[in-house]
Image 1 (cartoon, rainbow, N blue to C red):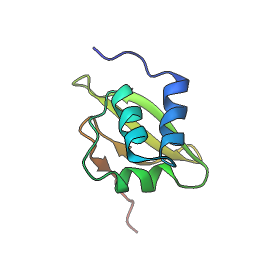
Image 2: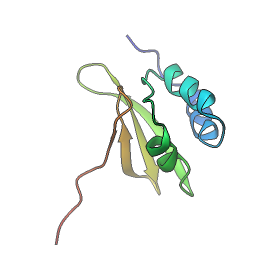
Image 3: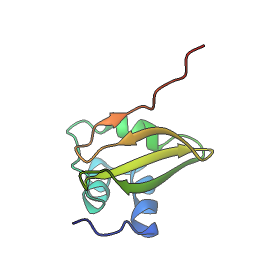
Length: 91
């Protein structure tokens, strides 16, 4: 069972996106996410202007990190490090 994600751990995740890969790896692991070999996709989402993050668990109990801009989910980082985008509304 995952421990609740603390505010400090979430803040560390954002800060680590501007640091070396090792720091981003450790921040992800601390939150229960297996870091992928290539961190560039995660890093690109976490370094957006005005980005925020929140942690939740899916129905299987795996950690999901939601990436937010203006309180809107723009991407989600799964427990396996895969980044998923929300469905885009089509006109």
